[in-house]
Length: 117
Image (cartoon, rainbow, N blue to C red; front, side, top):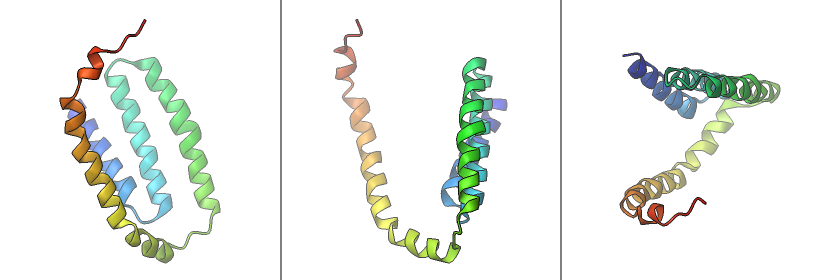
């Protein structure tokens, strides 16, 4: 039950960080995403990796992003006009990505031919 709750938090914070209009709200959702992914890693009993993930991503990178965005003078109306113009390109790239995923898993012959020594 805890894993499903955390997974739903991961998806929620991920969608909110992608679709939020205000950049400060986006970064706060990104901080929530990093924190819930750290909890997910700790649930998998990888404590050291979870703490390193928490210290590096949440402690340094996300706070740095937050301070940089707060120092910028971002006008929300100008962001909306620019984002809407990139939606068709983003849909094409995402559809190509999702069409290539089954090809990757069906052609797993390259995994058998790898030499790790």
